[in-house]
Image 1 (cartoon, one colour):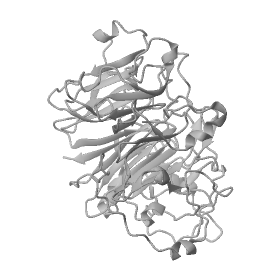
Image 2 (spheres, one colour):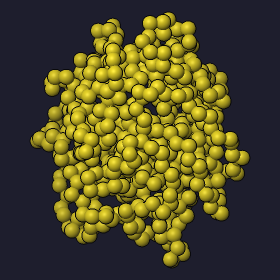
Image 3 (tube, helix red, strand yellow):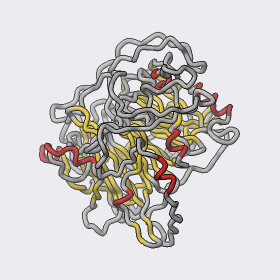
Image 4 (cartoon, one colour):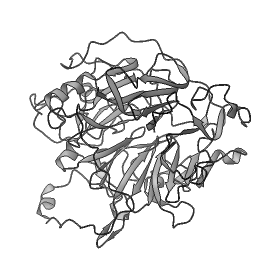
Amino acid sequence: MPPRRSSRAASTKPPSKPAQAEKPASRKPASKKRAASPERSSSPPPKRSRTKGEEQNIAPRASSKPASKTAAQKSGQTQDKPSRTKLATIPEGSDPKPQAAKKSKAPAVQTKPYFNPLPAPPPKARPGLQLFVWGAGNFGQFGLGPDVLDEFDKPKKHAWAEEQIQKGTFGEEGAGLEAIAGGGMHSLFIDEKGTIWSCGLNDDAALGRVTKDVPDPENPGSFLDIDELTSVPYPLQFLADEKFRAVQVVSGDSICAAVSDQGELRVWGSFRVNEGSLGFSSDLKHQFLPVPILNSQLSHKPGDIEKVSSITAGVNHLLVLTTHGNIYAWGAGEQAQLGRKVLERRKIHGTVPEKISLGLRSRKAKVIGAGSFHSFAVDDAGDIWGWGLNTMGQLGTGWESEDDAQVQLPKKVLGLSKEELGGDTVVEIKRRRASLVYACGRSNAGQLGLPDDDPVFKDRTDPDFFPEPVQVKFPDDDDPVVHIATGTHNNLAITQDGALYCWGQGTQGELGVPDVEVKTPQMIVRREGGSWAAIKVACGGQHTLGLFRKK
């Protein structure tokens, strides 16, 4: 789920231009304003301004220059004060020799079947997946270089990614990208080797690597260009050196997480609240390098080691689903998105992961999902649960009064239980096996994908939102929807045959069409004909990423 949007101006361009960067197009006029929200709608955290001088509490360590611009600089980390956080972060400034002296433990053997499977890389297919981008790129979130910071109102093939596919950077010959995630003003990619790449704004440590005051190996006493390091994708070399084979990556505004094929979790970045920065933990404002989280809280029994099965992110909170069916949540909890009470004067306590119960403690979770400031889960009985912000009815749990504006504890979503769906169960938030798509929440700018004369609007209690799930209809009934991504006001869906649809509102091109508002699903990538098939799509705060395969 995407984070909040920003209208900040682009950073100053450096004099040097990367070889792969395209010529800058002329800047477009200021973006049109969003549809106004009702007064009861909770406001997201305030906007930030980019300041290159903002402290990154990390001292870069010396490293040799990578063989190409696509290789990352290895960087270390020093914290403002000794870490005492319950999240068990790893201080990079410590002496590595004691670590090297420790004997490695024999890997634990899992003998008991997992309730939820370990995450696994997708099957390889050729041609490899090519990256496309559209929307706003004013902070380098496209990764096209410091001279390509424009808006695109339709999918644009990523020249840098295409070049890396040809070079074999992403793996074997023809290897492309496997996964994508859009943050507030940054982007994350996973290639076929399991390496994570990042680009975009790094003020709050969202890139998982150091970009400020990185020494230039070829020019002692000087530093590498920060705009080059942020506007071109670089790998998270710290994780690559750990042999961390990433399978899934998610991002909020500035908080990011990744899970490996072994069910290991790594987290970096920073959480924000309405007043500004909340921090990464009680002892740390920014976590610039990925660190393990949650290990001490998971079950470790002989032959039965609990691991991470999947992850998801809201604007400023994270959800983790384990192999044992447990859900953990942490981050900002002002809108009840953590499923627990977080005191106003103790907001930092929300940065400690805690387990969430779905009704009876015996219920186990199978699927998790997150909106900007709310959360979802599907349990083993097929029931969907929602909690968090509900000012626009976005939880689908109903609306009777202002008391329903926040749902503190998990509550069942209406109309989508296994019995109500005729035996089907939800396998992705807002989608079920029979390819029927459901949506709920704000509806004042086409967000629900329904025409103005749809019968469901006749009896709604509020003209701006619909508090219960309603069906979104697509033109081709015989081409089932297999993947959905939701942005702040925009939505995208991919079908089995590779068609890509959009609907909602997009003032900066994030819909992928020139129109600012699209009431009902509109095709961007065709099912038949055309040169590309859509495989994956992800929404950022003001940009969209797509992985397409050449037909």
